[in-house]
Length: 223
Image (cartoon, rainbow, N blue to C red; front, side):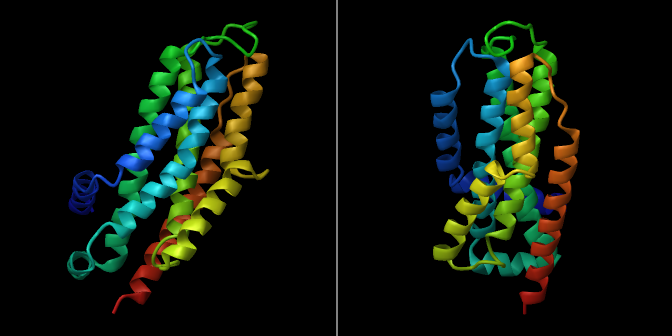
């Protein structure tokens, strides 16, 4: 699996198809996060924006390989492992992007609650932001896995489904991402730093199930 991950990471970097989602995410942060804003609000904003970016990165990794090369890798390592490597590569890329964003946002934000009434420890806030970003990266990757090949092969169906699923995952009550981001916003009002362990566990379970289903279906549909 290590060799497959290296191959997929190199393919992703060389393709430069990661530039549009990364640039869009940077613009999203530039518009919504400003120096001196309450740290928990800014971290929640940064984490929530990572969800659709993670789904987009999954689609890039799953569809970026030429068919002939994909067939060779599947024959050598197995179609399920080859597909899982694509999904894990996208997830790792999302995590790296999220960690970078959280670190920058933590450094430039004010360590206070909403209204600047209560001091918020920046290290604790950054740790909560990292966990929240991980929740969103996991759930976004699950969305990407369930709205890309082999489940949805048509671009005309896959892209709208991905966008709709990402939106619903971010706003619907009961979603791990919605719960984690809401906890950050609520914590900013009181100055209490949340620890989103339950949303993280839920997102991890959903993502593991989505990755397993997509990989298994890839193996079944391979000749």
